[in-house]
Image (cartoon, rainbow, N blue to C red; front, side, top):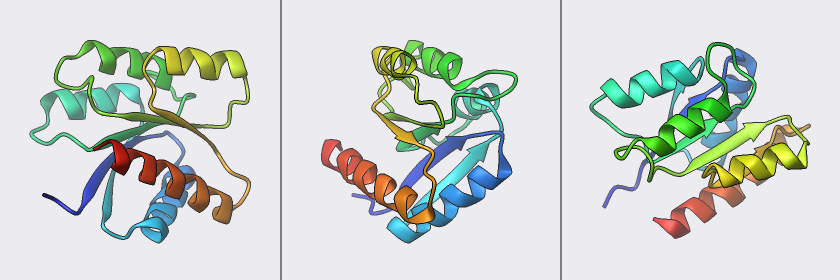
Length: 133
């Protein structure tokens, strides 16, 4: 029974990566976070890596392979499809968000306007994820 959890986070924006690192550390310092610059890099890390993360966080708008394409590929892979995927994005398009849930996303977090909001959203999602373990 591990008490640490690992998150793979794919986002091409270094500032967003830094922000989520800080917020996750604030919510639960035992969480380790590994980053990928886009969906293709995330898939390569997962398909060729020895470890599998507990959860995957994906931005939608990334170059090379976006979050939606990455989510679709993850759910096709028998080894990866059971890993819960949380979408972390600025989109407010309800149709797009619904489509992501239909593709198999576990949850959706809107990129918050404040650090406090982000910490709160992450706390809620992390607790939901832990409850499903």
